[in-house]
Length: 326
Image 1 (cartoon, rainbow, N blue to C red):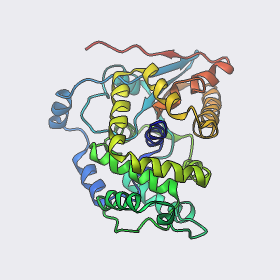
Image 2 (image 1 turned 45 degrees about the vertical axis):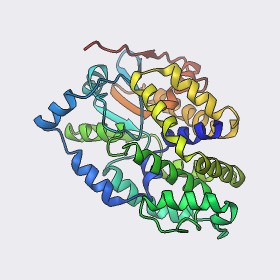
Image 3 (image 1 turned 90 degrees about the vertical axis):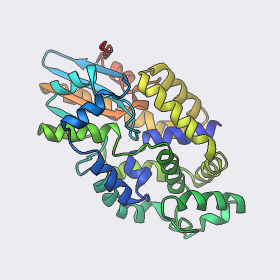
Image 4 (image 1 turned 180 degrees about the horizontal axis):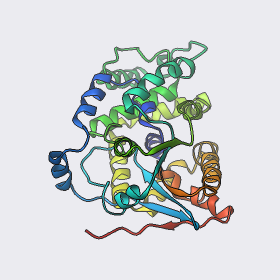
């Protein structure tokens, strides 16, 4: 179960292009059309959704304000989170900053992902993935991938990390969670409607290299664990989504700690190193005036190696933005 939590965490920290690049692009296109820009009808539908209050923090000085919003990259569109304090903060901002450049949406990211798959996801030694799995594991893997339009054995050429991420996309898809409903996509549409300045703190390639840099033995172990517990992974993702919707930062921290307790090297790569770099970016951005809405995965804003911890080391204080009452 510990490794299963880890895969769920990887899913929550990986951008949707990484998890869904091998998925059905036609499904992505139809989902994008369904999530069209705001109209009075869509506003009415949104108003009827249950309210959600994901966590957000803010750092300020005399002429700069940076909101730190913890996102969930894949969402099901069944809760209204882009309201209240989140909307107030966003409407004040002139600049939206995300982990990577997401202009063009999930479809464009899937296109950008294709050459990176060739470079990083295909095993350079041409080892067959099926050779390290049992017949039953191969059967489960092929059945899961078939739901995304992949024929049996299609992933034999790929490295285990990519198969694991694709499996996570299958589970997310079963829960109705897509990148087109994801927080970044919603924010990007709103930002483009206002002609906001757009920025990013990483690249898609740098994120992929994190997963590609995992030792092969660890990748194989993670893949086997995820295959053997595929039917349970949905409940873990659903729990993470529940915690996110409620703004339970302590609950998110517990999930992160439980899932990554036994993998300090991966935690450093996924969280500590990146969060330290993002704190440096924030420190430098504080030298220029303006209001920035920075949206990064919620897991980066909780725990002992959160962005806020590294900001404190730079004598930059942050505070939780209280939820507004309806």
